[in-house]
Amino acid sequence: MQEKLLQFIWQHSLYNPANLETTDGEPLTIISPGRYNTDAGPDFLEAKIRVGNTMLAGHIELHVNTGDWHKHGHQHDDAYKNIILHVVHTDDAPKVADHIPVLELKKHIPATVLSGYASLENTPERIPCSRQLHTVKDITKESWLSRLLAERWEEKLQTWHELLEQSAGDWRSLMYWRTAANFGFKVNATPFLMLAQSLPLNILAKHRENLQQVEALLFGQAGMLNGTFKDDYPNALKKEYDYLKVKYKLDPVPAHLWKFLRLRPANFPTIRIAQFAALVHRSLHLFSQIIEVYTVKEIEPLIDVTASSYWDDHYTFDEPADIASKKHLGKSSVLNIIINTIAPIQFLYAGEQGSSKQQDKALQLLDSVPAEKNNIINQWQDIGWKPANASQAQAMIQLYNQYCTQKRCLECSIGLSILKN
Ligand code: SF4
Image 1: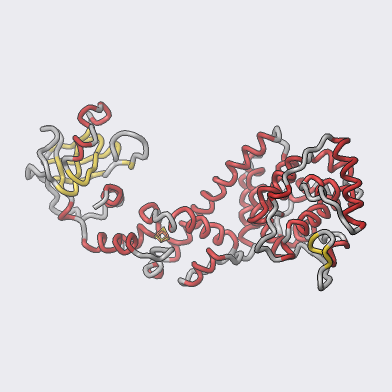
Image 2: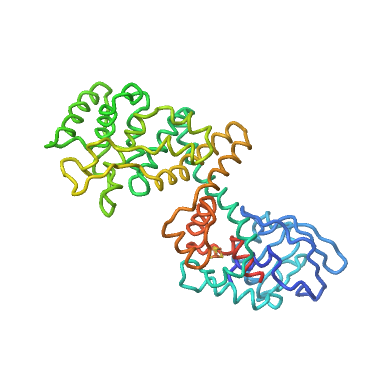
């Protein structure tokens, strides 16, 4: 028995409540188990019980063994003065005080709860409940996913709030930074964000209409124009950048931060930077345009850009590709940017404006996007749970990363449902 399981059993009343009695033999009724306390102090606050004919209100402390009370030093802590019941799994020592009744819970815990927990705890599967998941009702799973999406966005938006503060509340800069990070996708998100943060939007604004200058600024700040080149195109960018760098006192990010290894050439940071330059060239007013459109159909033409013609037959400078092709951003990247940048920014902005109606629209936008395909979603699908849309997929990623792989089944609605069954 672990204390966290005992607390879980108590919190969700998973024990058999019939014929409860204290270790002194007095009948005991639990009217309210109390509120689970995640801070310091007793485990459950403001509980209500009846011992014999006496009603008691106060806090409840749980331990695996009665003797743990002294081991944890509660006898010296005033926070434990208002304890009305000491719940233990095994009563292995005398009562800690005459006025604190003890309930030994061991014999009231159904064997199915213990075996259910053991099967979640001891499986080598990456998703421990993979064999029991089919027993959980759809409504339980769906409402849990809604809460997980909120949790995922809260975490994400917390870091974005910090970025917003860095930009002195400038939403255009936030959009610029986050879109840039998104263009780096998973592997190059950090150098892409550093690149955008090293290159103020107002400098790009001055050169927006000249694509070559925008490319020079972005490739130069990416640290990719330091070498010597054979082709005219990188040489022209280098010449442009050398001038602009001095003019604006720019400091590039280290080139070694960019990762090419194990990426498909179409995802090379060179291609993504060229596409990002095309996006900046197309419009610097992306934020004001994006913030008011809530359908994929409207957003797609705003961000589906194509890299300049040099990249038709190159993936890196000076190295011609075998097959020529236009380097469009592409539908799946557009959807990825809607999922990871546009819908969350719309949600955050609507929250700042106090508009729950606009927040609902941002959520509906995410609902309208198909679920992305990745390794985590594949694992869920392999055990028979397919996300209906991007909202559910995002929530399932949160569930996998923050709960399943950390074995937090006792904090998960699905885990609760399995143990209740
Ligand atoms: S955390 Fe929840 S969904 Fe994940 S394995 Fe445990 S019970 Fe299943």
